Image (tube, helix red, strand yellow):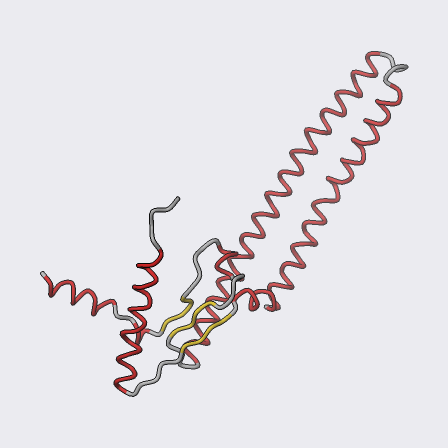
Length: 187
């Protein structure tokens, strides 16, 4: 169990957002804040749909020889089970070795194909998520948004295995140097 309490982090986020927004209200400057559902963007991104369709074709092509090998193993096993009692011992042993060898090859081919598809899918996912992040930043800058947050339970942050929240912030809201100056003034 984590000993980190999310409340102070949430408070700090709210505080950091409140300070510039309060200052903006005092100055009469309006900040634009937007929300996006990145999962919906992901699901409706044409490149994602097209590239995953191509990946499925590759997966199916890789699966074909594995399925053929599985069928051959099944046939050999059925032949063995049906005829084992009447088969000569050396023929029986040869068939057992053939089945064992085919099962080993099947496992290796299946694992290799799965690793290849997983690798291609991870690469594709990284590219798609990067495209989406760049698009969010470009739209934010183009339409003068100051902050863009994630909206929704299912989002690309979940797909990417990272925490969601702020997806874009205008450089006008960056208070990093102010905080550094404040800390250094304290010494």
